[in-house]
Length: 142
Image (cartoon, rainbow, N blue to C red; front, side, top):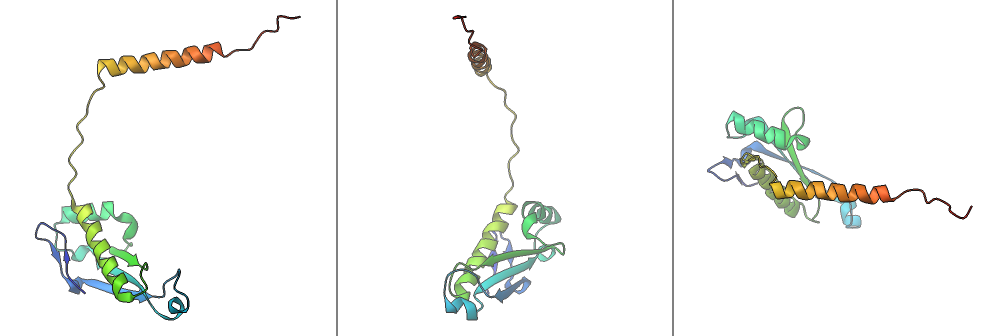
């Protein structure tokens, strides 16, 4: 297995990663039924060489993939070979961790312009007028 490069001089050593294999589902015929091609890569979030604040970011952004024990799981079963699935899972884990560590700039609050407010009110008035014109049709023949 290879090290994960998360950018900004953050390298996750291969020794902190664990790979588990299992039988894959999906197409592949008899090959799927007798070989373990699905690969699951596991990484303990506490073992990451990053600050505690960054670890909290990872936990909050990747919470659905992290177990109660704090282990991040990424699986791949798209390929027919175990090696290709391992490479895909490693690449996906690297991509997920990089995205989780990106600092998002705070949103600047903006105001709607006067023209936008007027347009919204005009649209509401037009809609209300349309609804007012929908009424019961009185029967004038009786």
